[in-house]
Image (tube, rainbow, N blue to C red; front, side):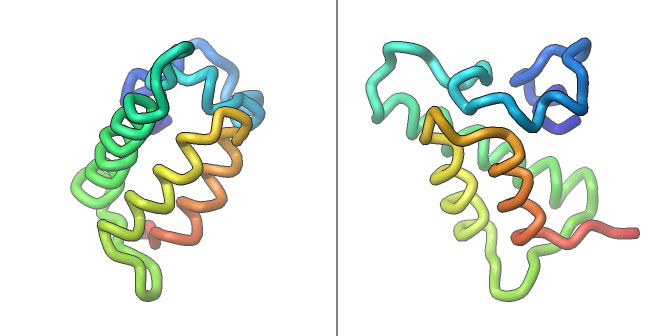
Length: 100
């Protein structure tokens, strides 16, 4: 739902199929943009994801993770157009602990 709330996916997109979407299919990834622009957009999106998880969902960082490492690791996934949403989800699961 985070990608829906952050304007990356349409709310009508089937949740069970979202994991197979490539990064290049998300709204932040502008086809034809320079790598610098894609990286900048990815950092902004990763920062927004982190804000949503920590401020709104009450998540904490797992292990030695920090805000900076979380954003850096998410950005590394986001900039590769052939990565898929489930790659991002796997990374997020390693970075955050969500309240029960």
